[in-house]
Image (tube, rainbow, N blue to C red; front, side, top):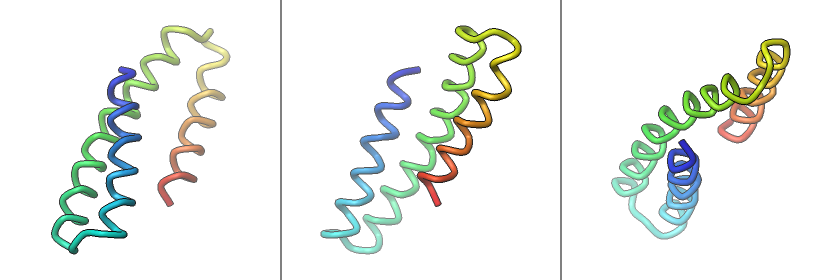
Length: 74
């Protein structure tokens, strides 16, 4: 689960680096990989919430988590 978050973070930096130095084909490919990794990252975060939080705290924590992801990606 932590590996998904780590790989997702690394892929974001890879996208930024390719935007500065790469061609559009490389940027497209790296962005695709980043999107795929983020699809694994979010469910793993939700699973951690369910393991470590009480039932009352899960909804609030998930909404904050999704808000942060939405803010970072858009």
